[in-house]
Length: 79
Image (tube, rainbow, N blue to C red; front, side, top):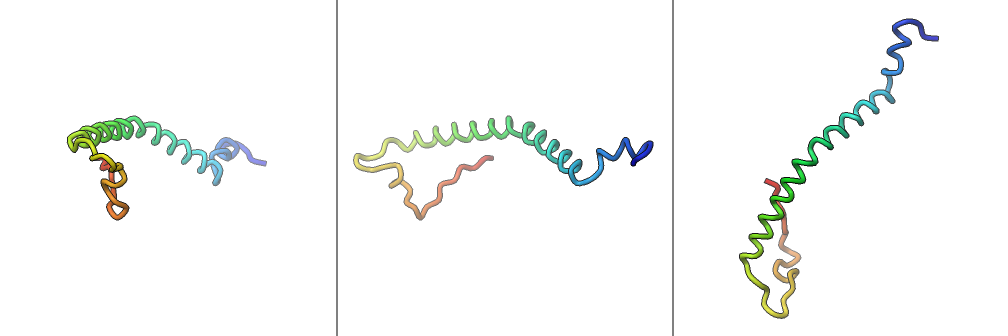
């Protein structure tokens, strides 16, 4: 049986309490970071789409996959 101040702090101690606190902090951080990440991603996608338009149309019989073969990497930079 816990008495006094120990009884008040006991629920805040231990691995379970630490896990809950860290989970809450992580969720808050993710929620705070998502709008900025989404804005950066949207801006990058718009820039890449505009760049792609500058290359023009593909010749007949070609597919977008043939434009960059499997040996070439395609990356979308977020910065």
